[in-house]
Image (tube, rainbow, N blue to C red; front, side):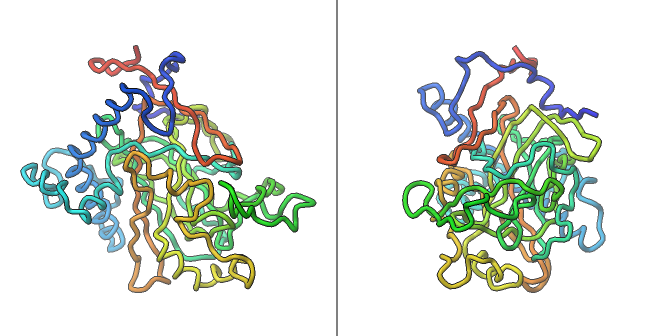
Amino acid sequence: MRFISAAATAAVTLAAASGLVAAHGPESKSEVREFHDRQKTMYHCAPQIAAYNAQRRADWSQKVLGGAPLAAKKYFVDGGYKENQVDPADAAEIMACNPITETKIRNSSCVLAPETTEGPYYHTQGHLIRSNMAEYQLGLLFLMNVGVIDVETCEPLPNVLVDLWHANATGYYAGHPTPKVGMENEKPMATGPRRGLMSAYPRTNEEETWLRGALPTDSNGVAEFTSVFPGYYTGRGTHVHVKVFPEWDVLPNGTFTSTNLIHTGQFFVEDALNVEIDKIHPYNQNPLLAPGKGGRTRNWEDSLNIYQDSHDNGYMPTFDIEFLGGVLQQGLIGYVTMGVNTKARYEAKWTPESGRGGVVSQVPVSSETKTEL
């Protein structure tokens, strides 16, 4: 069965080669102008995005207390949630020079989320469509509330498929339990862009699917996942991989396939929280914490500059995290929002020497009819 989002209906064919734009940011004068226009859109939409995030938090609190489910709400309807909205007259003050307020808004604002590498551990046709991706993995309960915004309209995107995968508490990915034969004693790279990294572990278990899952966004542009807090491995800070698809086909085994990709990225966690979670079982069993094994990689040391590149366009890729209970061990919920361009089509790629994502093709769409030219 094929699923197609409304945003994808106008993007059937790709643009000509002259329309190709590098994924890492503006390079020509016209691209710079377009980038600045998008920045203006971000500031214009700041109060709306702030209300969007505030209502997601309020809905979660209400759901925990037995209130109406998240999907039943409409965030941007006229007159809705006035208690969370910002008076337009105050917008300039909000987006002025208050670094704390501006950072919070930028964290989930309407800017284009940068493209980064999918890495070596993605399983095509191997991610089940489900909200609970934990299976039998041990770890700290971690709920991920992922919002998707159209950067052209600053509106939530319903019915796009959000696809997540990450390592378990001790740093392993499902399907990749051991190093390649003959590489058991490999040491991490000591210098260069791959400093701290080793060769990718091959996929030797075709059955494992834990900590992998995909879910369509609801009418509010939100997909909510249940998982365990991700672990880490040598050379990389704690991270969660994400892809976004505007259309997909469901396979008989409950997974999906799609050739229509509009975003590949990675989410991160504040370094101070990572260090505290390292003290909790089973995270304290990560082999890198043993004497002489190097310890965890801090965000600012992330190999291939993936953490740094994930901040392109003024985007903040870090989960905004809150406790589910009174103490850390009761679990966490992380909120993050991606701005995506529904008229873009990416070809995902992984190269061992680069943390960047694929190349984008822009699909020209009429501003009047909203249909492809």
